[in-house]
Length: 582
Image (cartoon, rainbow, N blue to C red):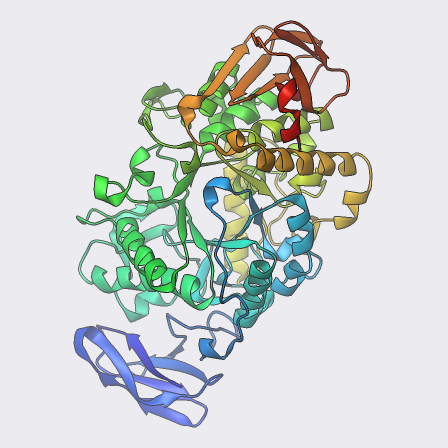
């Protein structure tokens, strides 16, 4: 049993509605109100401010009746964890797998995802990254419009469902990362402004008023977000957080929210004896995001590398619309591999200004590299995956460049077998006006980007079409691609240089006209041919080479050069080092 508290600094009186009746709360210091009796586990409750309508707890641990219904109290100590000796693998040597709980399996639940964990272990994944699971309006959606930030989405299986998934993942050696959204809240079920100054109109975001991180009352707002992060790490045993769109966190206080969060997460890790990681999504190309707080940075362990994705995607597909207009040549892909950022102070045509700053001295482990993720697929009007845009040989080349790069590779659900299901933008709002607004907003967004008329986000078929078809894995050409991913990950694990984050040890060669690219990673040499004709590619090696892995059988080795078929990638090592072969 625990005491119930709520922050409502503007209220003159606060009451809580329980099954046994209504109770008045006592006002404590700083605008906090507290119930002078303990709450039983699984008790439903709701607050009334100054005699107004019943509202859910801003920190509701469970919302079984929807985001506007009564909260339910959760005693986290009641769950029987089996991971007491668990220690997550280092992110630096990891392979991250992003998944959306609602479309990952036919069940669309935490327990459904649990049933597929063994397949991910067999693939070689080390870290699961769950798209947001905080409660949002409706049964299904991407989760980036969450409003019950402390309550796992009920349709996915609620608090115990998430705990079962994390516990089972740990039992299989898999770490779990959770995507959290602190830069905005969803349009329905967001009652925070009725409790206090959680939002401010001093700053605007694409979603409206910004979270109040540096104005009057912001101390408790910051506390709200930090406590939320700590809850996932402490009560749900999550091993790290991916923090959405940190560039939209407008905070001009001396200690940025992320730096404060870094300190608190480090304190939790020290107290618990378990490592915890923080990963940022940022489009700023600012190395301060991953610079330690002691050196004036924000202290994130890593950040997503959109420049790597954009450079790789543009070279492979030939697309030049929207932000891809800034990319398209092998020189940029080579720079992304060697530096992490392509735009490190260079002029961006898409932005019509200089963008970014050089990440000098940063390890490749500070960047997550990917061919696709939920944004790069789902923000396309038709939700096309790379498997809709590229044939299998090019998918194999792309996988090799991601998994053999000096960065931490990230895969998106189904990528490993070239899933044919799209990943569309879908919602399930009940408010007709909101349904209309989302539908029209999606059309405007897609018209600006180009690529076709998007499916109606609210149509059930839009969601259903986005579910993975796991039976594809057993059929051609999916089975061959899946085997290729397994072999690449096994090779990455077998050769230490492939997990070396020292960017100054990665050498890249390329020929823009001949469309080939090479990487030198310690004892290994990687060559890929992106042209429609066979190429003879110089490697300049004095030692006899052996093929360790190739996406095409017809690879020839000559004196200081190799012959590579069209749209293929091969990995070479010195003949005497073949024992390291996966």
